[in-house]
Length: 270
Length: 285
Image (cartoon, rainbow over all chains, first blue to last red; front, side, top):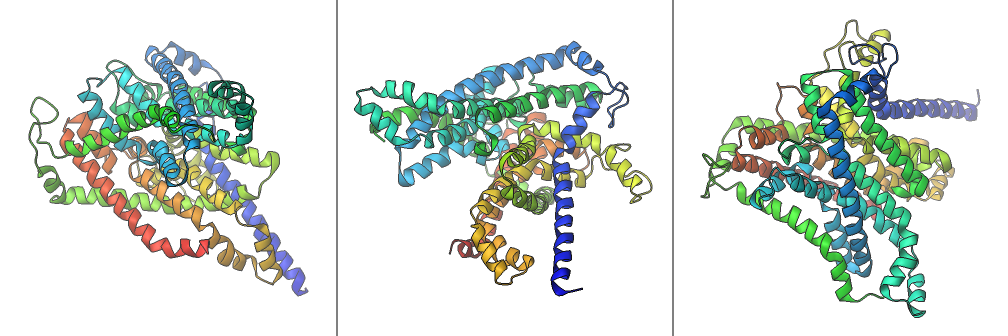
């Protein structure tokens, strides 16, 4: 065998090995989600994968459980308010951030993404004391503020990325034609950043829907979000209803990601 | 950009207020709380004291838990890097629809809650679950292993949680390496391994470093995974802290634990940054 052929053979086995490794790693990433969806469709009485027969009975069971449904409704409500508030505040902040330059701009960016960089646990502990002090402890309003804070960076990053794509010349042209600042924003900038704005709102919603630690510490009296209700359910009853609940939240996330993909394309989203 | 200073600050105000009032103030509050005396009817007392810190630092138990937390997060970060690097490399080479699909695979764990994913691992690692069954089918083990409520499962689940946080910065760094550079060195006779070791790895370091720091900081303070998958036998700092705050209502002591944990994490990160400073400089040059 010639030298060249030998190297070629070596290359091929390296390529094959790499392909196997990559496939294994992607399987690793997807395993828990696939398992849950599979387990939720079982017809049997236990959480197991592969499922024993197929049925939707555990989804029926889920919607018959008041505590879980209440959790779902509360999560949806908090998530919706979070999406609206964070995307509005983040839109304003992104416009402001665009006007800054140099070190101030970097510092501003850092400040706006702080809730993502500091561990959730610390923010949650701090908020627990702070909300108690301002008499919002154990209230839905307090929890709502926590979710808005934790989801804000997602909205900010998406919206400011979209805003960077708008050429400054457009704004200048609009102003030179006599448009007021508000008109320029509403008629020129807003339509152009709309996909980014929608993406920010969706990511903020998904993030809020999935938050656990902060909800645990700021848990309002008599109220549970879906993840909290699910954790309690898992500790006391280990039934496929939990898999159905988890699948519902996975479907919400997939729906959100699909929507983002439709609006902007995922590659630009990260 | 034609925008007055006044307008800029007016637009920034709500966001700045949000971050300041609901994040900076509360964390400052936590520092203050850690010096409060324990309360009898309230969760904290009126006076100030050092006692919580002396109690933590004087007790071998807390040192042990702290060491376990810092060490486990280190293992998680290292494994996460090993798992994420090939994925990031593969992702950085993908184009078009394939790239979108791969992004979706990586983003999908990021977009499903930590609790949901941990629950998935509970099913996978059950005594008669798919993991044990496939290991038996492959002839690697003879009887099912007890995986649930072990430290290994906590580590596995944490790696899974943080892979996207590592993949995305490394992918960005890899995308910035001009393809001509690797092609040039390959055409001059460098083997694949040499190209990787001498060009790709050093140049991707600006992505590795922030990924490692972010994952480490988040892994040290992860609460849900050890609480759900770790069982009752082993304590980590976050489970201990939440236990003090919600179980026994010892707010000052819980805060002191949180601050000791944060301070140690910062120390580790500073040490890491100093040790790897040279590598980063080399990549920039």
